[in-house]
Amino acid sequence: MHLLISGIPGTGKSTFTRWLVSEHGYLRCPSAEEPGSTFFDEIDRARKSHKDVVIDYGFPLGQLNRVRSIIASGVEPWWFDGDRDAALQVFLARVCHPGTKFDWDTQLRQIVEHWKELETTFTGRILNVISPGPVHMPNEERWELINARH
Image (cartoon, rainbow, N blue to C red; front, side, top):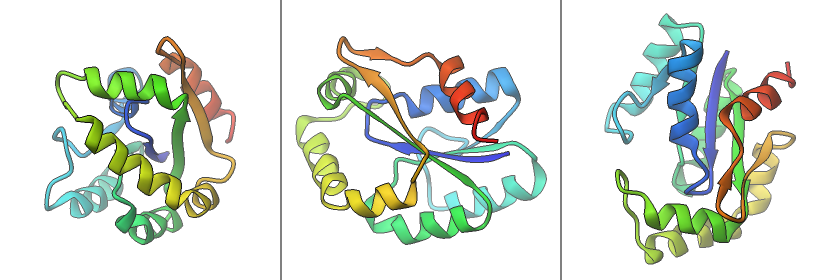
């Protein structure tokens, strides 16, 4: 199965995709921490050579059409969302991928402005995975919900 995991910052997208690698043998794109200049070529190569690929892509909204073409090619899209204050707490506390409140505000403003397009793109595949605390939905539970769609 080829999956695209996107969503608001701080919802555990990378944690979940790395869990899929370790627990279910998925190949993760990008192979590095962040997508590089060969990211889309990497996706194409991975999909041709591996039956289970997960794309970890909190994409800039300017890439929405490219994301839609990836989905149209047979990749199953999932959007991770939830309590925005809890996600902000996680986002600001990240050590390996730090961000500022300005970064958060910029990303969330774009998401809010384009929500109707995002909601249409991810219809039926939007999971609320973070709640106040902050508390993340366990990876096993996310996986069960994703598998239930098959």
